Image (tube, rainbow, N blue to C red; front, side):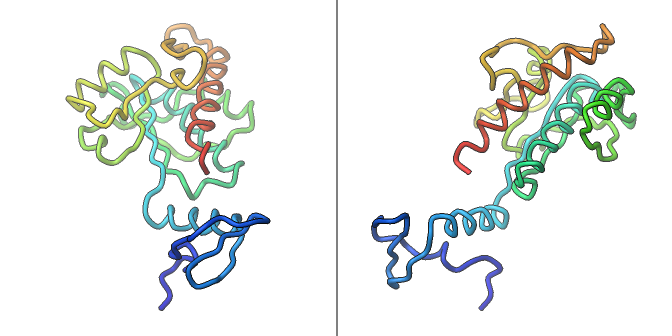
Length: 200
């Protein structure tokens, strides 16, 4: 019967032996790389890592974070392991495309963008995503207002994954400075990527 993923990940390992191989009950020998490949395939069948980036309007910072993170996981060959989306805490920009400043910066950096229209975060998004990541403290407060509570500790800010924990992503809505925003988003996404992939 074809289960759609390698049977060797179903085997129970008895002990680790020399030269980077595993001895399993059936006395079949498989390399660590094969095991890792099988686990990755199995993870895709069972559960992908689901990330939701949040900002106030979902046209500037959260969309930029979405595009940057999607580009990072794709370049690492891990696109099939992730679901990455973005949303707003307000209804002010619903249906609007990404801000032209975000689009311009993504084009400048050669980062692909897929079609996107601003959407508002819903309470049931808490159950759909593993990580709900705001751009600043105000976003976090509004996220909590939407979801009510965070029993699984899914909510954080993007720069929490960097040495600048507790700081906010620069908001270009008020300054028009998308350079600073990109600097912050890129730093935060790199830290988040390292955190999420450390065991992959």
